[in-house]
Image 1: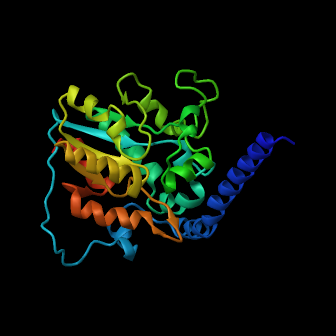
Image 2: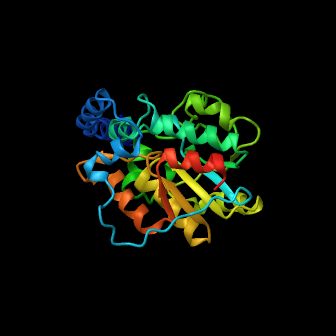
Length: 283
């Protein structure tokens, strides 16, 4: 075996180990998620508040502000509504599955899509794709390295859709009727967490939007990063707290980390029930 062949074999073996380690770390979390699902968790405010770690403080120390929906200025932005995050067969399910199940994120995102379409509200998707050139990066952060090692959001080519249908980078099947309707704006892919490197802000500005209802995956990574960048560029942002979820790993609960920051930073933090109701009334 030549030196180059040996190095390629080591690299392949290391990636396989990284993938197995990442998925195995989520096994305990998935068992807990299955138990939670079995007792029938709902999206109602009362039941969600029953998840004590995520309950709102009885006596908030921060001012309670809100965002009003203006039908001419408000868009629904959904981040990464893709199989790798939201389907049990997705490569990240081992660590996000418990949280996705706990908050009924798959169903809640569909409710937001339905409400937005019924209200004729613009819907904008900020997807996450990795092309072959992205796997040649020499600088990676912690989760970037994990995503690359497990093949998350992989696409074979920026223009060729061969192999895309049903892959981890594809939309969740139940969302396709809303996303592929000829009206939804699908942005260029973001590459790390935030929308700084895609055209989300441009697309929103070009259609006159300055208020965003934000949902999708995952809470403390792409969703929080989108929230921060949108706020920094002059948008109002309401985050839908049970239409997002995060990884649960030995390092911590990503959803809880995000929820704390949503409360501190966003213009509003809503439940799906409240968001749908407001969207239907345009208020």
